[in-house]
Length: 435
Image 1: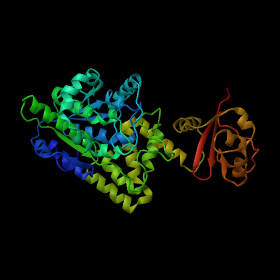
Image 2: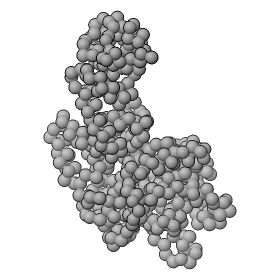
Image 3: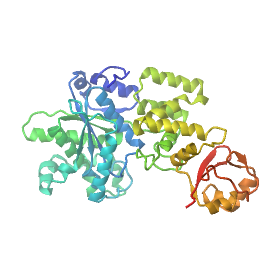
């Protein structure tokens, strides 16, 4: 692993790096002193399997584990196969839908695979570890829970948590009210069995993190084990300065890390289209670039905003990390082809563009019926009437030729591909399915 260009080297510099990146929300007293010893520390972050894929919002905690490992710490990725059956109520306006055990297991398995792309799991002192809290929560009886866990939490303590307070008026089930104790059990289990001294998470998890610290301290004292010291770090919640909701595409859909749900091209475009007001934050949060490199790109944004150098560098870096260098390079080439002025005539490139953009497929009848029918059938116009208006208004180009007759029959490249431009920027490749 390469040494990061950060404010200080090794574990002692972890908090200063997070502060420089403007990510740090809170940390427990004494943590900097613990890190300053340089001794190995293991830390964990939990991922609930509410879906079969993580999304770009999860890159914040993922990068937390990456930075820890690069500095000589041991990352533990915890998949919440047990807590995912309950649902974290933290600052939500309503209960999360409960998952079945089979769905939670399948989602947990998929998340395991995704997390393995980002961390080094080579056995050794700082080799990453994965765990699933269903392995211990699923074995705990109600009597064990009440006797060994419940006695360490008072109702006033739990009610005082902000994540609980915001839900009291609208209603909070006992199931979700108890969630913080389950997450506390996770921290205690990892502390005892994996040597995990620290939990990390978003600012909305701070209450759950401190509940775990409380359980570790109280249970150790009750057992006569002396003082048990554990720590926590929370990250700021990402609010885009532009006002855009982070992690959502222009269509309002989540941007997933699974290529089957968000193509690498669409993923690349999400970062490439970042607002100038947001990209400075994204560079600090979602890359491992050091201060010099970030400062250089900050200057480029200010001096040459039209070049979008920071966006292009960011988009490639994050896409390569999530999907690999070949997929990132493919996204760059397809983007260049889509936004060039000249029409694309290479059938192989047209096929790549169609696949990357999930382009429309039509039958030969849609082509034979003329451009207006083709536009409507391909979903490039809401209706044949609107398609005719677009054509007669001069807004449609097919295979590089401006079309003025709605009944004009286009010729498909290699008998299969039709490139359509609606206006100046909306460009699609339509596949003609002869079958």
